[in-house]
Amino acid sequence: MTNAPATDAAPATAPRTSAATIESGGIEAIPLERRHGSPWQLMATWTAPNLEFATIFVGVIAVAVFGLGFWQAMLALAFGTALGAITQGILSTWGPREGLAQMVIGRTAFGSRGNILPSALNTVMAGLGWFAVNSVSGAFALATLTGMSTVLALLIVVVIEVLVAFIGHDLVQLFERYASYVLGAIFLVATITIFMHANLAGPVKGGGFSFAGFTLTAAAAFGYAAGWNPYASDYSRYLPANASAKAIGWAAGLGNFVGCIVLMAAGAAAATIAGFNLNDPTTSFTATMPVVIRDLTLLAIAVGAIAANALNIYSGAMSFLAAGIKIPFRLRRAIVALGFGVLGFFIAWSALADAGTKYENFLLVIAYWIAPWLGIVLTDRLLRRGTEIASLVPDHARYRNPAGAISLVVAGFISIWLFSNQIFYTGLVVTAAPQIGDLTPLVGFVVAGCLYWVLFRAFKVKLGAPFTGAPTLVVGVDAADNVA
Image (cartoon, rainbow, N blue to C red):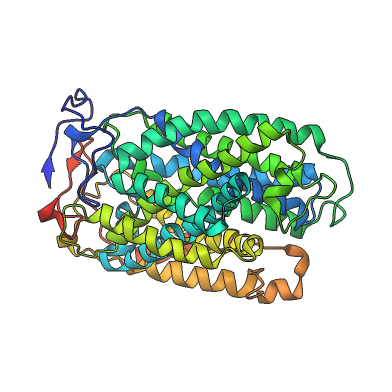
């Protein structure tokens, strides 16, 4: 670890590489001379990946599956999305200080070996799970638009997704920026068209408001918005160390919230239109649109899937490497991203049948692990305020913190055992009182945070030295640093 210039130093002016240049390395810290960009670019980074049909479907299931009326659905959707967007903003502010990815920063809460657990969970959920979900929605849209087979459409979508993620950070950021403009314009028109045909005050399947419907909808919306949380600092770590934390937080949080809530509203409104078919949601969503708007919307759904999955594959690869796996190649991150793309294609292929039900369950399950993980990392950061972490996160530091893994496992088990509301398993409390819906994320977050606070002090977990305000170049966070 070496000291670098103070945070008020002038931004580096080192030559920039082309966005088409493959990003080498893995999860090593980004040195000051390679930092670039503006905090407000994060607005587009987190808006574009939410402009896809998966977001729309969250709104659809709030009305069509959980039985809420439109306005009740919007209240629950806004509540769950806001929670995920707020944490997205907070976590994004952590990247510039050390230039580290989110799951690497998480080593302070879990230790070098304990961090394998959340890194593996995020690898599976992000690099494979979300990738499959979004690829399927993009494939259905492209197949509907062109008439080609769904499998061929899936292959085309996956190839483009993998190409963008393979090249790396700068191309991902550039793609998200321009995608946010194009997709934003198309989906705005599509949303207006949907509202022109919606029956917002009409009768709904469940008869209107229910506490169970509210908690299930809020949990699903939180699971969607917070699904980006484990990636947050992956896309802020390239910013200058003196970038405004307030601007970073607002840009990332607003991008996540606005991108989600507008399309969730469109989905909830679409579900109120007579004849909406939950088994064919893409066709039903576009059925009332004029041909030109319908075709543009289908194209936007396919491109939106690519925008989302460029981030999912990129950060899935980062999480894989954050587990400490040594891949002695200069392009190790790109190679891992390629591998995830191939594996994700076959998972998505298998999910083409009954995609709607599988997505509904996935939204809830992802919140089951992210909520306790959030409780732990936020509590850890609070306990470490005013201290540095650069001496703890390198591989050679062999830093241990059993409090994190214990808290994640215990909180996850208790919350799921008691409160899960899944077709795979229904918790004891929900079985006895089904009207409560799904409180698993809330219980998991609270239990994990409280338990971690107690165990942190019981284990006398190591703290770093007082933070001086000067950024440090962290050396050795990548198991293959010597070939970076």
